[in-house]
Image 1 (cartoon, helix red, strand yellow):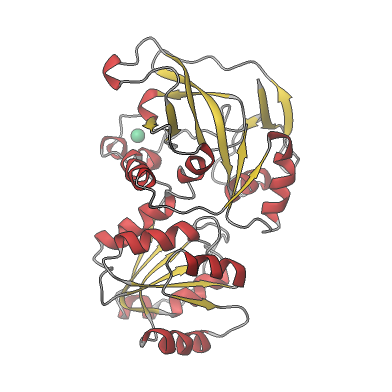
Image 2 (image 1 turned 135 degrees about the vertical axis):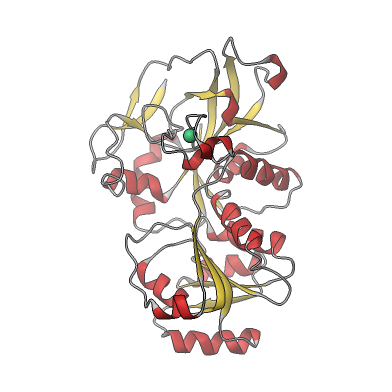
Length: 351
Ligand SMILES: [Zn+2]
């Protein structure tokens, strides 16, 4: 089968022919039909994660995976209802199944987690073996190119917004800021409208084209933060909404300067959830965080339940997408484009 594998950090992926992987009795061999490309693919190649996990090479990249059930392992229960030809999406974050986090359903934060796309098997390959419990069957009316990005870009902000909702930070009298409206932020705007109970949504970015998409997807207001001070933006926010600060923030970028700006706009008792990883460190004043009783939430990817909910929204046609399709042979070209920030919406490889 064809596979795009990283043999050396910092180098282009090697597009090669490799044997179809073996699969365990509790796994399903999935024929990949589409796989999204994520900024974290670029970061993996560039060595961003190396100090946290030095993954041995070769690594098959690609973790936004959808496909078709090809072969079913012998111990996959019949009651699971999988049949050859079923359309499926892959829940990433394969936990050990034994720890407290796995038992609570949050397999993506298991200390012994394995990730497709960050090890031997990944979605930039024609086949991938997946434990049956990490597959969700979906309607064959849904398009593969839309399903693929929903497993990360369209999932991660969903979990983040749920955290804001569960913290009581959303409601008709609340103002929510979405910072960074690229691949994840487009979805974050839509989920804030769906789960926000009438909250006002304001999108922030430096790129006007990206902001225009956010507006189209339901942002009540858009504000360009390019070259502006926090005071300028606060005034602009006040003009747009009647309030100069934000009750809740979802940060889809995690860029150092943008985080400093976003924190400066966070209200008393505000909640901040970060799902972006562009930067590596933040440097923000401490006193306002304490005296204003603000809360920071890390939110990592999503679990099986989160993805099931996203799939339900997709099945109802409630999610809009901005996609850029490419072929297997163009993988390295797209890694470069993504590194330069030159992809609008989500890049998706389709076989
Ligand atoms: Zn676990």
